[in-house]
Image (cartoon, rainbow, N blue to C red):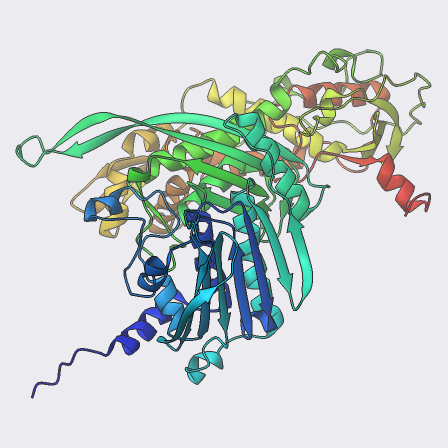
Length: 628
């Protein structure tokens, strides 16, 4: 007798459970996704002991009849796909038919259901322990399905002992429930833990309009993360060309088959809103929460200098793409996806974020807002002594940047001009601080400019603000030349790269020439480095090229011609901007505010630190104990 044997069905199910059911949160994920696929509009999740003792998921979806309820306990039994071609265009959350039998094989499971087309009103209840059916009987139940999972991993002690504390497992379940609630605002969710209600979210009114969808997601974000986060609406669409293979003509091989539209919409944090982790960074592809490093890099690239180092964006973004353009069948738990044209999707995501951040300040205020020219209540005066673009030298490393001359300290008078009527936005989106009336009050610490808005107190960091002004002036000046400067090396060097990096570098020669990097092919995987931008010093040429490849891959197509010099520019303007102890006159402060208004991204310095912040009256009243 041979040594290869066919495993018993119960063992096969337990092996499958090892892939599908990692922890109690995995059970909740599979059951909630089944409820969503069944068209549920209300889902209730109850857990005890972090899901170890009990997980109950009840929904008001379409339900199942007796035969379907029994058949769903078999492996690979599903109503969501029928033929292999369906795998290339998956539009449902689940599709493999493995979840229920896998969960049933490692727990005591009870399934109670009633189909919407059942005329008798009698439901079906099935009890199954460790994969074996114990009872099938009639039961009363509303239309929909309830699945109870008790004693998870009771028959696999080795798996059960690796579970974390109940509180840790509960937090993982709550994290998934948060994602499900954000992705489906039209569905009501109730989450109870140890017989205590964690939250109850009523369904939001949603139609097919983008304003309705954005409003619903904003409402859910406020319910789950609080009201105090300043979020911007994102709604962008773009196309990319799609090619298909021609099997009958190997010489041609591929042909263009039209275009695919990608819509990116949702909410992102306004400039200055960030977190030290990705915990509040939610990305969805066709309503499916995903983990994708390329999308994370694209999001960071979209923010670019609007984020401090080590900080991550706050966002809830949805990417809507044709199901055939994304493969969701590459991960056992369906957490990761793969795009057929990943570079194009990354480019469109970065573009959507950049356009939203730029539009936040560049859009003109609506009629209810006071014009920008009247926003700062400081009368024009003589030109300021703050260094501007005209004072900057022509040397590549910006060594000739001007320096503000120290000015004798003097008090900035307080204006008595009244502020206009308070402003607001009907859609809940934040109003840019530089679009509202501001009244100069004074300067504290010879660094922070104190202003008053209709909503409270505004503080501006004069050093950070001047950094942003000089940074954008220098970028515009150098970009007007079309390409970065290049300086020949005295001794060209050869660089050999791994195959993957070599292929990428071969296709980016034009971009490298715009960046001022002289690289040419010198063999199959060898390149000749003979020129660098004047502001780049590379002691190790191979390390420099590898770092260059990583930065270009993260930045994607359309990279700024000065990307290699941006860090040097940022460091240089930091040295030459006005400092903390440089006392500025009232006229100079006005010029600084006006220059900041003309910047494309005025709310952060080149290092991502905020240039201007607001403390509203509500916060002030709380600090003074006027309200609780």
